[in-house]
Image (cartoon, rainbow, N blue to C red; front, side):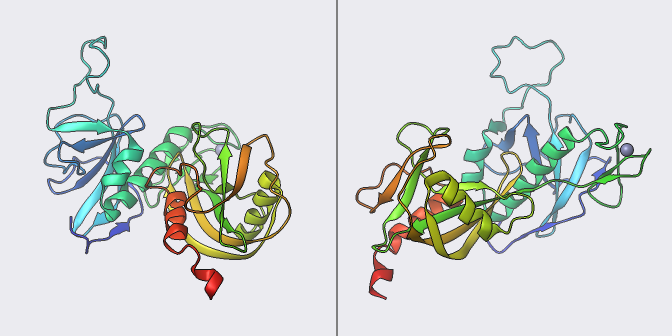
Length: 290
Ligand SMILES: [Zn+2]
């Protein structure tokens, strides 16, 4: 796959035929991704194992069709205690943790994998009608499920979240330790968008709630699909406008403004948080002189 190719999403319909030889496969084993031993997405012609569910068309990369499979076999890591009849992964494939796989895949493959992961999660958790409780059926013309009894149609869910890089007047960056983080790791303030809110309002509210500050000049930075399990992270920059740093003690246990020299351990590469922190480090001090 060259860098000139893009991922084009398709309507995500079910296909009951076996994959084409050149088809690119996004294969999940539970929450982990099945890759070839050279670290790329398998092709239809390479895959000789069965599947747990019907194949879902995701889109295409260049001319190659791209689809989602869920595989229910064994990775061989279970000490051989599994029952007879469970398929083992052939030698030319390996199972990899999704986050580390996403770090190494090319851009267009990452989009296909994020789409596949979010659709797989949605399909696993949306079997029954939330209105009348009947079993849902797949629509053939679009990626949705419909209740045959009351007619309600359910679409895949994406949960928007915001993340914000707040800088002080002297360009220090606000970093916070969330209780869910491992010891010593600090990152940016983040949180889910509440129903009815704009993203900018969500930034303002999360910052006030979690560290007691007010911010101004909220600007869009960029976004990232975050399929753990179904978020879309929208990154913003903002400037400190007032208040004392006061961690809420519930989610945030410590927070402060740091220079690149004094900052604690940031999150690992691959997240938009890390991209924004790296961007601040690369431009540190420049805006003071503007
Ligand atoms: Zn219903």
